[in-house]
Amino acid sequence: MSVNSYPWDDILDEQTRAMLARRPQRSALGARPAIIAVDLYDLVYDGGPRPVAELMELYPASCGEFAWRALPGTIELYRVAREHGVPIIHVTYDTRLETDPRQIHPTNRRRRQPDLKLYRIKEELAPRDGELVVYKKRASAFFGTPLCAFLNELDIDSLFVIGESTSGCVRSSVVEAWSYGYPVTVIADCVFDRYELNHKVSLLDMHLKYATVVDLDSALKTIRDRPAARKAG
Amino acid sequence: MRDFEDYCWRDLMTDEMRRIFAAYHRERGIASRPAVVVVHPHSGFTATVQATWHQEADRLVQEARRRRLPVFHSVPPVESATMKIAPVAGERICTRPCESAFFFSDLEAALTRANANGVIICGAPTSGAVRATAVEAKSYGYKVAIAEDTTGDEADLLHKMALFDVAHKYADVMTLDELLAALAKMPAAEALT
Image (cartoon, rainbow over all chains, first blue to last red; front, side, top):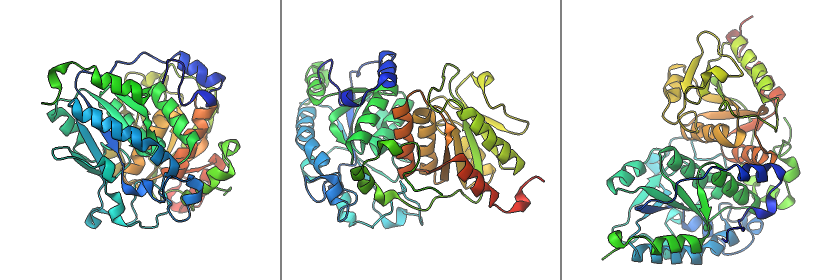
């Protein structure tokens, strides 16, 4: 996004404008970033690129049009990241039945048990050989997973976070990434939610408190302009 | 109890929103063995939204003490002197280095030792430490309750949306009166008389 354009521009009021004006400068992305891709599984694309409200009856976990809108940009991000040696770490839900205790779920949504196959990462965004997949049971990609250890082993010093939902798993992963000390960049065009207001307010809130929100073009430029040392090949 | 969406975020609700989030509507309540977690803000924080949060939180804490429920205080490092709700003897202070009261603190172990199966969270800011604490409490498997009047923030929009998100995904959000009524239904033997 250009210097003066952010997804939350149309919802700002006096209070949030004042908070933005006081926003502290955050450290930029480091030299060895990775991409954390949260919950980009088939379930959230269910029912196709239609308004979410129309899909709720048959596909209550879908992000509909918002999921599909983010797909081409995310495919492009993966292409450029792989070309430039930026690791992609995929995060999805652990569907093994024996890992589910009774009545405990990541959120309080009433669940119609979906077909567990729908937690497979979307084909266009599927992990390639050698890319890590983290299986989680809770909202944050870090909670109860070895992600933090993986990042140390890979010598990662900063994170791009993408995926869904902005106000749920993405946000809780960003808060925890920040808590673990990583500079975090959220790529606005590659995160989505079920409703635009929740999406925009969470982006604003993360930008104020924990992360730097950028658009895809700016993220791609950052990846392309990195020093050549870590490029693939 | 009021309608699920009849809380501080009601003026943000649209029909579309109600339809999209209907899958989260459910019965709400408190755990059978709750502990109260007071999430104290940084010393520089001033609530402009729900500025009386600490007076309401104090009412909650007083009632918890009367009922001999465990009360824990989460404080940012070296800022415990600024607590608006002063701990009394026997109440543990758990320092939090980051945002969530659980992250790198001894709160989770303390809750286990206190035999709590749920938490009632109050404090500020709603969209920061309170929200992060609610998310992590849910992740740890606790039943989570929050009274909307016992949390405060710097911005109306952030306060309302934080409580909206938390109410739908992670916690049972209600008014303080509703929460006190739920506490009153607990077995009387637990209360100090």
